[in-house]
Amino acid sequence: MKTIELPASIEQLAYINDNLRECMTGKLAPLLLKTQLVVEELLANISSYAYDGSAGVVEFSCGSVTFDGKHFLRISFLDHGKPFDPFSVNLDPHASDSIDDRPIGGLGIHFVKTLSTHYMYSRFSDTNAVDILIDASDCNKSNEK
Image (cartoon, rainbow, N blue to C red; front, side, top):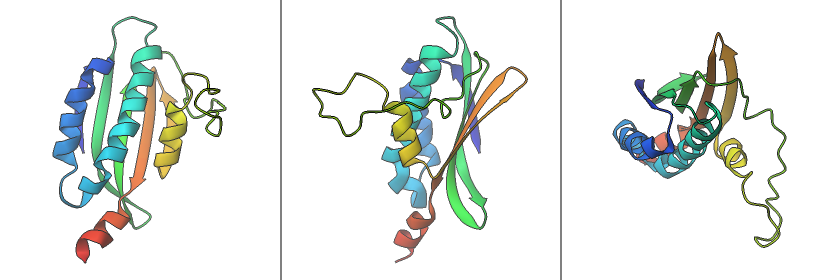
């Protein structure tokens, strides 16, 4: 798995996306757009809330893994900001509301949950860890034809 450490800033998204394109070649390429959306939402969350406006760092990892005999793309973010489990917040994303009636925000983590096969938050020492698995099994099948 490739790991990079960078400032916890949404301005780093282009750099992360460049790394995703390098990581997601061949059979993983069909997952690139979905993965970029997930990564953007998680990075935006960290850059907006983890450090309360102070400078901080984030560690980003990307790679393929096998879990229970299935092939997945794994995305991980580590930060040393304040404790926050984005998946424990029960946000009503108003997904069924019309665009005029829907409040701004609240859909990011909903998208992450919807687009991911598995998602997990953990806190150890002073570190927030978010791990995402995206099923890549279908990519293997479609490329084998």
